[in-house]
Length: 170
Image (spheres, rainbow, N blue to C red):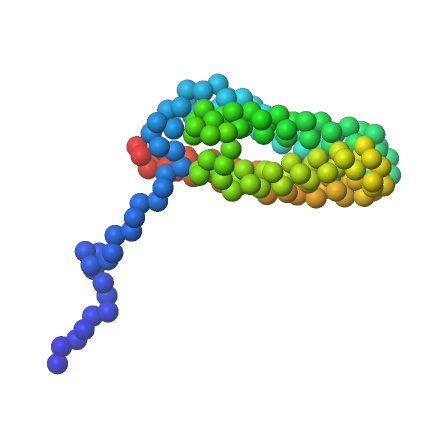
């Protein structure tokens, strides 16, 4: 009586197709050569710092009722930085990938970025039109900030994947 093994040797295992790399060699070279990579590298932490200050000011207003003007100004500044990083990011994407937005490597990050921008601009619209009371405006800002945190996480994940890919190539 023969025993049939259920174990599969490595030689018998199907070969998986290699995962698409975040950057081709040419894209990596363009990414490393463009000034827009540095611009993004400066604006991203600046935006995060503005976000932290603004969250603190919004929370202060919601908890104490004090500091509405400072919280409002911080949200407007955060929105301005967000729009700046989106425009410069689109330029970076054009230089690196040949299209302004929705390059396959960053498609879902770009899609979600538009949601983040929409929430920030909805805040500005509601502020300018008086469509929401101050507390409602602050909660809308917090919703925009929650979306921003998710989107920032997407980009941080891509940075990590790019670093791992670079290490694997070496």
